[in-house]
Length: 405
Image (cartoon, rainbow, N blue to C red; front, top):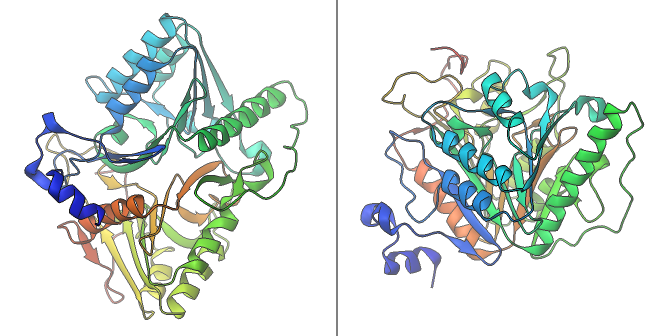
């Protein structure tokens, strides 16, 4: 019996489920967590939202919370404000909290939020200039509790990510994957200490190639992956190369370009070559991107992909919130892939250069029919819904200005 049939029988789909009866969709070791942007017609009542999940994790912490984030931003009266209250409560009861932030994320962060974090008892905030290691940034968004649970997803530590952006993440209790995420944090925490002390950053020890069976974590950049964690830049083309029938992808941004320090965009073909090769051998590619992906330099590459046989591309535009314009919000930001109803990918990378090659990002691969089907259903809800529109190769699109009305 398919997952969708099971959900229908259980009465857990669509609008038939009241908020009070909200369930959670999970497979052993993994719970799919989803931000449904408020003031939209979207509904995923069988999935929990990240705010309650993060609160539950913080409330259950016994000794340690580790958080790795791009930036941090709160807003009065938001869900994030409540999340921070529970993080504060954890610190007050003696839980040791380590918070690692990207240096370039300081400008994106809210100053009051950073001040509030620094004031939490037992919290140590460190800022890592990841560019000094690899030229990239900490773009991963994750947290760990007591070394036993983790959360990895597209949600930044940002109030908008919990209410006004389409996001997808995972609460993880799988011992192997939690251990892999913990190893990533320890590597970067130690790197920050080395850089702060003006010492060389030691490279992780080498080890045997990780297994590609079951459920596992891959990360970037490969040079700074601890033993047992595979290379996402290698794994993504591998998975696309194994696809036989259909690949569904949802992203904020897609282009075979890489953002350079001088704002140039050298060609980055690693992912694009794999996508085009899959389409050429008959695999159906359904790529869904945000309306922020209409940059004049990126759009021609999307159009060149859209004209290929077996490729469909849709651009998603979410409606403005009832409260009015919110900068850097009201967008799809999930980074997911589903392959042949067999494999699900939930991660933190956009599909451009600068993410899988030189920035810290985390991606979880699950070889699970149930998870693949549910991720595929998330994709299909948007794909068939009122906010997705097929990319026209002849139409002109406005350049995106996500921070301006």
